[in-house]
Length: 203
Length: 204
Image (cartoon, rainbow over all chains, first blue to last red; front, side, top):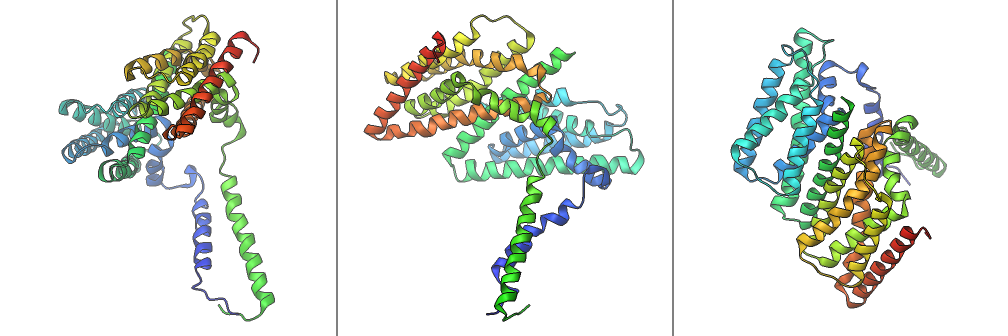
């Protein structure tokens, strides 16, 4: 009985082993600057929550609204990236939590909001993400690369979640998916509300 | 790679199994450190799960939502955590609130009774009833939040646990589609209500 290298089991094993080299990259201190920035929106809680809330909202919108949200987010990220150094890398966590609260409440109660509100909200969220992604330890081009990485990471995080919400809720109209999106957004609302209150009382 | 030796074949399988076990060992290492978990997600997650009064009330909310059907299935589990967070803010701010534990027990009594008696009030009334009791549950969670080592993970933990208990209630409540199932669901409501009496009187 022979063992062929094309056996599906071997491919499966190879696939399962592939994460091991990925682990070898180690933690953030050993990674390159772009990777540091790229991971920031995924690992910084306030950034991750606010972008997830925005994505849940974006995914359920029609095409015209999607363009408005994506445009607002892109402009906000650009503005924040350009201003981060001049504003001294401010901590935008509280602002992000407030924006996350607004986005998640909009999803939970299926509120569309006027176009100016949507544009302002997404612009502010993008700017707060980029402003809060800088690091005073970096300067010059590494600093730009760091923030560029964060902006790319933010777009990918939002895009991934929004894509699945769009597919399941808008395209296939799966009711359980819609219910899940609304329930998760209510959890996000509750979490952000409590964290905002905690930050407020800690002052 | 080719081999016709059965012993070699067994060796390859053993080696593959060992490698596979190493892969899963890597996943096991992915856990957060104990200090974070102690005051973080696990503590928050266990807070509603370990309190039977919380469990009874959360499951009752899901059951009632499923029993009412249609929009109530998601409205009640959406309203509850948001209003609960409002109660949590009161707890955080240290606003005195009397009868918190009694309010939690009362939530099990009232919502359980609603299910047992097959009450079908308008959706907004159900949302107000559920929301009013959510304040007591949130207050109890919020009061413990400043002591948590990681407030974000603690909050996420108790919110996820609360949501999963709601979902558990919804899943059980889906049995109302069948006549016998509806009787069973009403029976569960009665049990929850009785348990609430036990919590209130201290017998449970």
